[in-house]
Amino acid sequence: MASKRTEQVTVISLRELSQGAPAPQPKETKTFTVEDAVETIGFGRFHIALFLIMGSTGVFWLAGSLLIIGLASVVVPTIGWRWLIRIASIPGIILIMAFKFIPESARFNVSTGNTQAALATLEHIAKMNRSVMPEGKLVEPILEKRGRFADLLDAKYLRTTLQIWVIWLGISFAYYGVILASAELLERDLVCGSRSESEVVVPEGVSEESQSPCHCHMFAPSDYQTIIISTVGEIALNPLNILGINFLGRRLSLSITMGCTALFFLLLNICTSSAGLIGFLFMLRALVAANFNTVYIYTAEVYPTTMRALGMGTSGSLCRIGAMVAPFISQVLMSASFLGALCLFSSVCVVCAISAFTLPIETKGRALQQIK
Image (cartoon, rainbow, N blue to C red; front, side, top):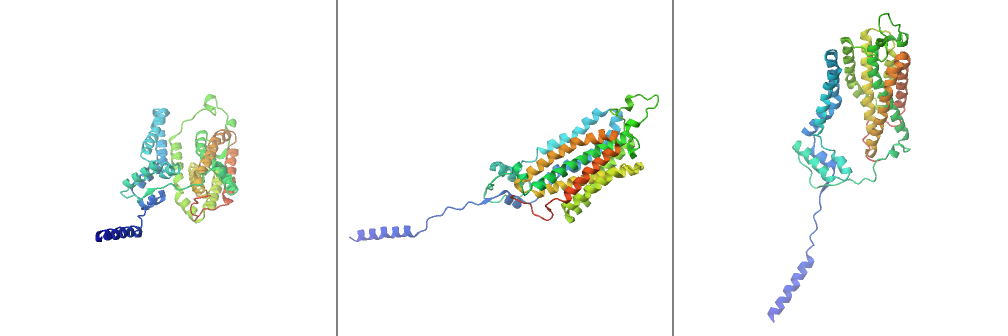
């Protein structure tokens, strides 16, 4: 009888104990985003290598251009232009090989749903930087929609988009125009707008072929020196360009440099010495490079993340159209009317300056927009 009562007490005690104890809760899984991982990993050797490789396409590219121009003055008169092309292809091959060491963007992989590839990229960066990854699981941010071409023409961005397209087309037109015009000025001796080729009298004993617009004249060593010096101008105004962008703002800085570009195109028509011509070409190369720097920064800042790549891509397409039109003006129209070609280049730059000044959005001091 005593043993039965003890058994009942024991069963009741165990039942009360099981009812009073809280049920085990599942442990919450930590998560992190690409932004969290980037902040945790920090700056290191990977970013230095990325800077050197990507920077070489813009800054070391300039060094390569100067080297090729210098080699052209030696190679073309001796072993021919074909060997110059073979030598010029070497930097491109080196860059292609270097790009193999750059992993795909983790942000891009996450946005496309390839989380594992994004995680592998972040782990690779952390290993190179000798850092650690944040704890938890990489999650994909929820995006309601991605950028569409129609978003660029939305009422909020329509005016900005159209004016940016005009500026990109005009800057590219001026950039490649001044490069091609430099060769025309030196090869055909059209300085001062004295005479067009149609007015040149062919002297006796000189073949008609040598006077043809399609006939190529060899550059003198001084011509190569002029091109080298003017090419250096592409980095000459970078410090002033940076100051102008940060203190004057993107719109005002771009409108000033575009207006100066228009002025220096007209100054090419002034009769001047060889040093004066070099100075004008130097300033033109410096100004058109500054224009590119500013519009590139502005375009990347004015659009939100969902539209940024699309905005840059469409602007780059308009840029190629300007590059395709430039040879018809700097090489065809300039042969017929030197002043007419310069006035056209200058007019386009004036239109771009006005368009830049009247842009509806100033991005100076504004954080990058994440959503529309």
